[in-house]
Length: 143
Image 1 (cartoon, rainbow, N blue to C red):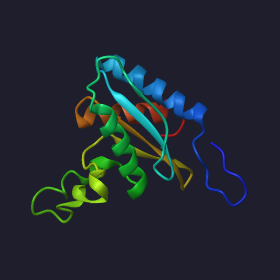
Image 2: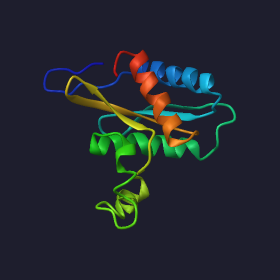
Image 3: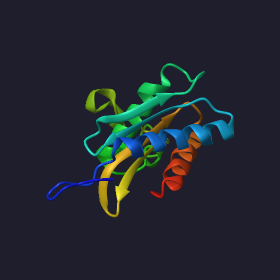
Image 4: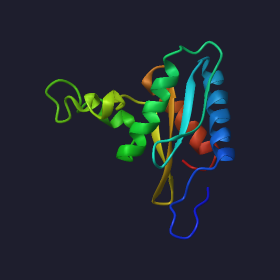
């Protein structure tokens, strides 16, 4: 990760590609075909990949999971209960042009306490997607 004077730390392309490779390894271990996206702290995609056999829509969800994790600086799975009908955040997923994802698979990436980007994974269940993301971050020394 880099960040100059007065700049926040950012995920470099090399690290983004490593995270994608770690996701692919974990997904393969679980027998999954997933898509994954790494964003910077502004929610802009640095790198993304869709494994052979992954659903075509998985890429959009992976990007939007990462985007949501960056915007709120929290794992996307935390919104699952509160966004149900009658919940405190009901309707939350209809904001921001429909890009908010309220189920697991998006994780923010921090350098210490500084947000530097996010990783989104889609293609399995929410729990499987999050497990792939968590394992990728741990393998890269970020989780």
